[in-house]
Length: 152
Image (cartoon, rainbow, N blue to C red):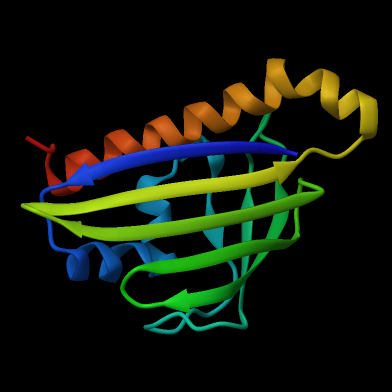
């Protein structure tokens, strides 16, 4: 099992951060265009535990794949979790934490994941999987700063 974490501070309120990040519709705005991110299911205005969201993405070599996540925990405006139910990982558990701080909000993304294909997945992880995830999360960090401004 592997873990990827990103902490980011933004000069917006926790309520503004929550409103943006809890909406699956906004995920496309912070996902690289080459991934062809497309939500296939209808999404409500507010997420809730038990919500299934179906996507189509092309994370590698333009290969389209289906990805389904379930929102398993929601504690507005401080925390939500999405777990992959169908997709490219053996395990994908993504925690989103929000904490009000002076002058803004601190956000923590933590993903615990396991790659498929046994030893082949372990070999591919440091050369393909991890660098691709790093690239995607770095892109999200930059796009989020473009949308909301940089922390002082």
